[in-house]
Length: 179
Image (cartoon, rainbow, N blue to C red; front, side, top):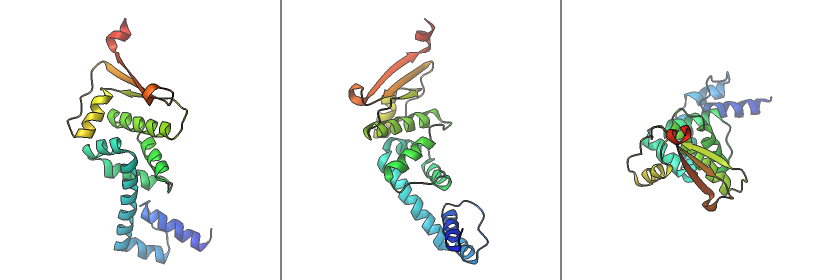
């Protein structure tokens, strides 16, 4: 690796806040500068804007829960990202698929599936919800209170291009499964 490449990788690591500052006088000065914080803020702002434009439901949910900025920053600090907004959004949504909050997981999977199908994917996606997905979408659109999880009930939503309207949802209850 040549000196220019080391500096470029070092600058990227500084902007993405990836830990130790390389032992390079120029990078040491950059690390102490106020301009680094400004550059980092601008980079995160652009990426957050890209996510907001492509993922309105997930963005609204994460903002409502107070974790949007932290999750966007964590994602971009830890991942190589594409300059294409569609790929950035898909990657961000995929990063939430295993989130501990079931609602964040469901909303991000739903939005990811819709973007993929609208983008031409022939795949079929299943999203499991612990509350009625229409109520969640309506609450996120209007600012109303989010519906509570429904005990002993799951909603299995399928998203695929060969479905009428692209989406189908089936409600399952524990009582119906035990019969």
